[in-house]
Length: 205
Image (cartoon, rainbow, N blue to C red):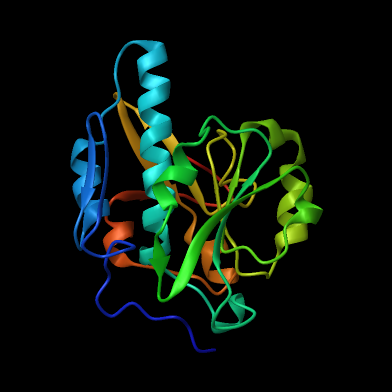
């Protein structure tokens, strides 16, 4: 099946930059630069705020480092949707980060959902910790729909999630479940995979 190819991966909105104190993402390989500074603080409150900023930037950059099937969009004018299912700590940060950004002429927007049944046209779905007891139902509902699922609960990948955020040694890390991504006909760039731990649907390290 044809896919949206990224022969020259670029950060969404090439030439622009987004910055907050301690976080700068700029230019073609913004996500790679981000990985070099993705360190969180020892103070619990500062660490949480820092981690949420970094996660929001990663969600934006995933749009340029994953290939979706062409049928992931209803038409050429359809937006690229980053969805948030359940509660999250992003606040308005994610909305501010994606403002005026596009990927392959698709305007990037953020949508919030209370239940997986509300998820219609969506390319990236962050599943908040509040949904941890409903993960099996969520993944069954999304099966085969070409949606990149992202979360942060400990068993997220083992239960069928595709990308998991986790903190180790005061750094934000990515865990990727290639099996589930490939089953959904998503292709994750090798550039992104070099930054990630490859996790199994059966067991996470």
